[in-house]
Length: 116
Length: 115
Image 1: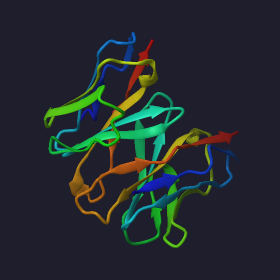
Image 2 (image 1 turned 180 degrees about the vertical axis):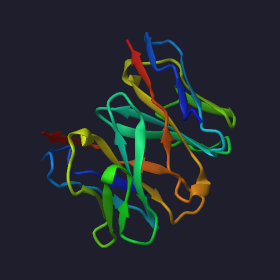
Image 3 (image 1 turned 60 degrees about the vertical axis):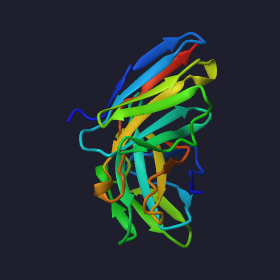
Image 4 (image 1 turned 90 degrees about the vertical axis):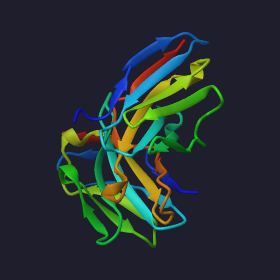
């Protein structure tokens, strides 16, 4: 069975500093990995994905994520945080090894707080 | 496209009443997912459909919950009878497998409060 873990409930960063939100996963086949962001009283919005290829993927709003197969991790990063980045971030995984399955499982979420 | 449309946005009901949540996916999307979000349990996958057919309903909590997708443009999630522990935000999301990864587009959610 696939699973995804976000070990930090909250991450606090000063504006202008780099940020990292951690995610680890477990799948039986090749992972398809995603990051989504949720603002208050809104649905989740897609940020970026990894399917194959370059381990560093770039997404919306200046975010990027690094796929590390040996550590089964897919950490979200941004070089310089903005106050407007404050939101709830979710990592998600789909088992790409089972071609007909599209079950997408989400982590518990990490609340990112950027202080001015 | 107006995106994924969910209704109602807010529902307050009393224990024992029937609740029906509705979802209109993005036109052309062939997958539809229902998720439930609570503080305690996070975002849980309840059920998903492919081409209107339920594929995996292992996340549906119990027999009180049922979901249907009678056509490509409409799905319902029904709770009968409702209980206070069903209080949550219910999200519908749709996707197109042809994008290669099944990137989800979420609706704004239906916030359910069962008294």
